[in-house]
Amino acid sequence: MYTITGVVTATAGVQSPLTKSETQVRQPPDSVHIIVVYDNNQYAPTLRTGWGLAVLVVSHGSVALFDTGADGPTLLANMRALSIDPRLIDAVVLSHAHSDHTGGLDGLLDTGIRPTVYLLPSFPEDFKRHLRSRVPVVETEGGQEVLAGVSTTGDLDGGIREQALVVETARGLVVVTGCAHPGVARMVARVVSRRTEPVHLVLGGFHLRDATPDQIQAIITEFRRLGVERVAPCHCTGDRAIEMFAAEYGEDFLRAGVGTTIVVGAVPSGAR
Ligand SMILES: [Zn+2]
Ligand SMILES: [Zn+2]
Image 1 (spheres, rainbow, N blue to C red):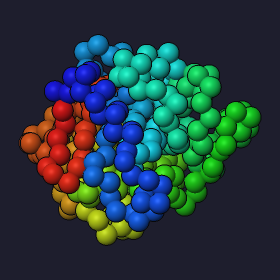
Image 2 (cartoon, rainbow, N blue to C red; image 1 turned 180 degrees about the vertical axis):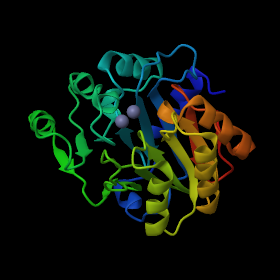
Image 3 (tube, rainbow, N blue to C red; image 1 turned 90 degrees about the vertical axis):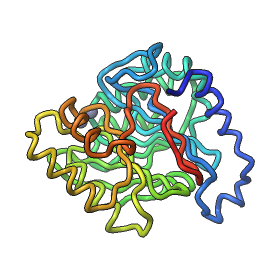
Image 4 (cartoon, protein in one colour; image 1 turned 90 degrees about the horizontal axis):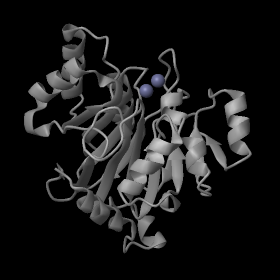
């Protein structure tokens, strides 16, 4: 179990010894930190839960926030409890336009930070217009790198258009999904079709709350076929799917909720 003190240590990794020129060599960083800062599942007992998702990724000394949860006060309170200074955030990536993923953004920007925000062209025009008045906004239609070693899948259609985050690590790729409306296996398959590295971990909302056991099993089978090594389902995955993934993946299942910190390094990684 990762203690709050441990997370403070983890965020110290933000002061990476890597220089900007070294990051351009594109070796995977020694370690990548992934911290769930907003989720409806409890993990660290002192943090607040709320329906939604926000995940912080620290890589190559840069910080990306993937989604922002549903409200600023909860997001900011959790970041404060984890000793994460909002000013460390270089980029915000929004998976899709639902408010449980975008609702914390205004509160975050009210702290005075001005990160570049990456979103999809399909986001509502008034949302984009409002955001452009506050920060630089980039529309990521086909997928693109947002920070060294951190990129988006580009949008997939599933009724609701959505993108996932892809993070390079020494052990393979980490895919972070928001709600996975286009289908979590489809989103991972897109990554596998474009990249040569193995998928080390898939973390985030798998959107299987209403799925039958057979449907969930089909997703698990597809994950195995795609070579997904570890899973950390949370947010909208649903309790039944979470337990089925836990049974299938055993030690490679990571219990995820608000406060979960995963350090992926060259040595065997683990949830702490
Ligand atoms: Zn959604
Ligand atoms: Zn959601």
